Amino acid sequence: MTPQSAFVQSLRSFPLPECSAEVLLAEFDLCHYSPSLFSQLGVSMPDALSRAVPKRQGEFLAGRYLAQLLLKKQGIAPVDIAIGPNRAPIWPQEVTGSISHHEQLAACVICPRQQELAGVGLDIELPVSAETAAGMPGLVVTEQELARLETDEQNQIGLLTLMFSAKESIFKALYPQVQRYFDFLDVSFVGKDAQWLYFVLNTELAASLPAGRQGKVYYTWLGKSALTLTRSEYFTDNNYHY
Image (cartoon, rainbow, N blue to C red; front, side, top):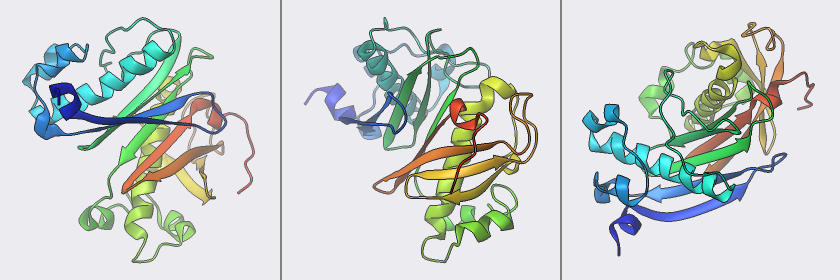
């Protein structure tokens, strides 16, 4: 087994509904991380990351490695995906994308950039702890959202993890238009079906994102991990039925 295959242990992908893009996933093992893997996998380590703990370096490497694979698959010359001032990846001009990871799994998606402020948001999360879940009402979700979720003690952790992940994805997708940080409670969950979570904006985030604008977030479960994804196009002037 090579050092690369010991670190990145498996790769898989799946297509997205209503989108020609795919999500690329990697399971990785931080126990096999070494800084030398950056050069072996063709990824540059940013100077700021050289002082980070190995866990942070390994997670960054896994995500950027997936980004390089997807760029190559789309016929785009590999480039360093730098870290922007808001910590978002800086993509080549012709695409937009998103990267997410936790300590075991990394995910990346890249879509053609149809317009200047187009964005895509991807997030993966392991289940939040019971302590974290107890502190989420009033910070991540409102009592009204909790009522719509119809949570019970058995599935509350999973549903709250899903809400946190979905709102993270919304932030990533809409940030190119908003250009500032906005709050979890600026977006409300209003319904779900087997594939989509539906949201409404409570406040005007930008001229193109007025209060009352509806949007949707794709969701799925990968074992214990929640994966959510949305695009700025999903928050255009649409009326969703849920």
